[in-house]
Image (cartoon, rainbow, N blue to C red; front, side, top):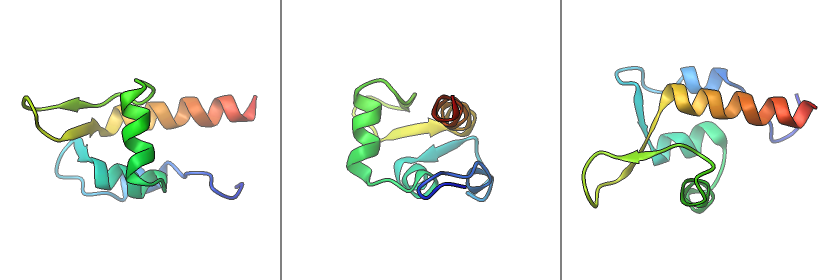
Length: 77
């Protein structure tokens, strides 16, 4: 696996009590800085949502998995 590539198994290693993960969990899974993740969210490249107005960003585990598969598939092409 190339240096810096993300393994989808890392997503399964996160806390499995919910389908929704925090920004810090997503950063750990992706191996990116918090600012990078916020930029991806702001640019609407990475699907995320806020549960309440003014709340913190959250990501669905399935959305993150799909996004990773799309990005890794595009990199191979």
